[in-house]
Image 1: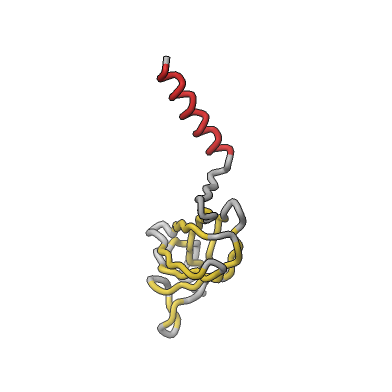
Image 2: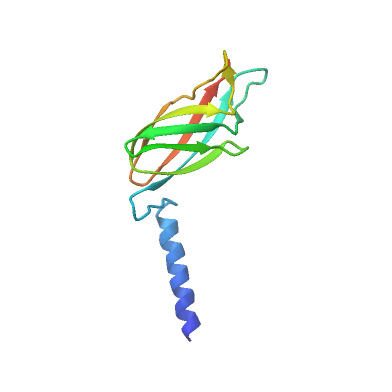
Length: 122
């Protein structure tokens, strides 16, 4: 009989987490922020391509570094607020400096954010 209660609690926890839209908040007030970095332009067809860039975010909680995987995806735990993003490595360059993404400022709300950063290589 006890395993029924445990199963019910697990199902309830899963349902609550699904209703929260996947947003997760830590005890310190940090929220999960997910995104993708892609390039646009370049040789035909010029369709968006993910890049595994290194980047730095700077905002109200200080600064943090991140790295997108080979599919361009990344996730960070950040305090809600406004952050500036700068690519620091492994991305396209112009005159020996990393080309910066658009937008280069993001807003993270209390439930996190989904971000799409575009590096134009036209």
